[in-house]
Length: 111
Image (cartoon, rainbow, N blue to C red; front, side, top):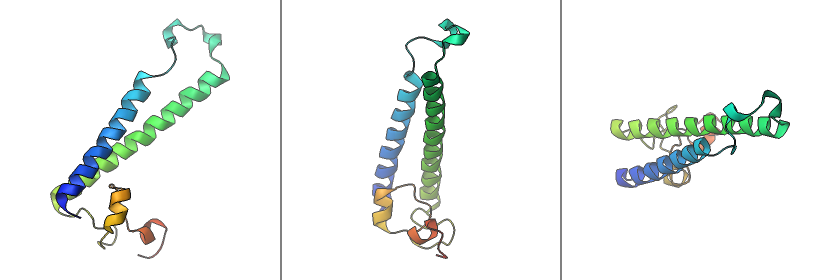
């Protein structure tokens, strides 16, 4: 894959992830936690808080994957498996620009 295209894909992925993180951090309950009485949290509120925390962790991991991919571009190793060094097909990188492994390796194959 051409470096320019890889940078475009990663920039779009970074923008998407950062926007989701910003939306998640800006959203939430209309009433702040400091205004709630201790017994006012419903199980739905607790579920949503836990869901949002898990989603934030997932998005942070995706952002870290973007950063690792950007580092591989700088090092000239983008598009190569971090495990075997085998080329990752362009189609896979188009679908998942942060891919670090070939499809076989990601499935648990021997590469």
